[in-house]
Image 1: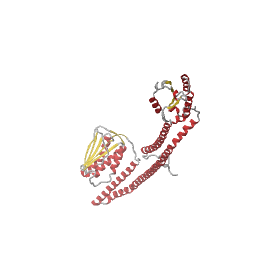
Image 2: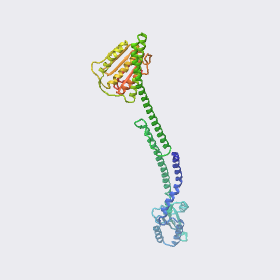
Image 3: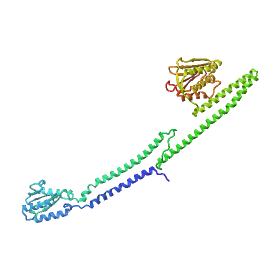
Length: 459
């Protein structure tokens, strides 16, 4: 099914508006005319100008030879019939005899000039009011009579109603424009709502950090965008699943290799120990000592690799409890003291007399201290110094050396997996490890996360 285009929809709205606009005017005329034609209307006495002129001349002829009172009486009768008209008459001497109504602005005595001006002013099809002048009788000496009707009263009912057409046309035009604007607003409002819904889906990822798929409502450009968004989510989910599988495979492989390598290393160490009894030369004993050291180092690397794998997978046993950190550090330093002394190290230990309790796993902390001390022994042997300081006020543990630093060269320089394990363990226990290293030595600071401004930083 071909998707519907938003552009095509809006062009259809514009086309309908253009078509509807010219139809509006005849439609308004029809709708306006039908109700009017179905109603009965009283005839308008004033709409027939020719008939009124004939009537007025006939009345003038019939009033010839009548007395003033008779003329006045007849004109009053005509006034009752044509109540919206103004009627007056002037006798043969130019005197205004009767005005109906009295407010008509005509002179009491007419002179020739005023008479000519009156006739000129009120003559013509466009003159308002419409004026009919008729001589009284057949002799012009008897005077003349005048009837005046406002032009507006002479319109037919249809003409009166038609004058309001312009307003209806204007209203209809604005109605069509308003309808077009309203439909356009609805059109773009719905587009905006759909885009906001898509934005909300992007801004609110699920627990795994990947947004949830969105329902496709319509097969248009936004629907295509929603479909592309859903396909992207599927690809991310597939990639995330593949990463999890590869990570699990890698961890399983490392765990298996670590386990499989322990047995041959133990065998090598046992045979090396047996050879010590057989070999009596000094050079042979040195070689066996080197083999034993390398086997021990390799065993520790395998142990660290296995521990790192278990830590990253969340499978390393963790049992936090309130632990006296002063006592723990003192015990660990005492265990390492003979090792440092045998290597000619100066060991500087400063611990407070009072107990300080940290919520930690004691075995994890022992492992961390072992890794840090082992790091000094391997990488800072030339400095021949190891310092341990526990600040009771700041509750931070400082371990330092005077070696070449993290960037310097040393005989036992490796990948630093021991420090990585220490950092991971401390992070899990809500502690930080900050490493400040220079050519004059390295300081490793352990403190509570956020309490002492400690942050992980490799120098």
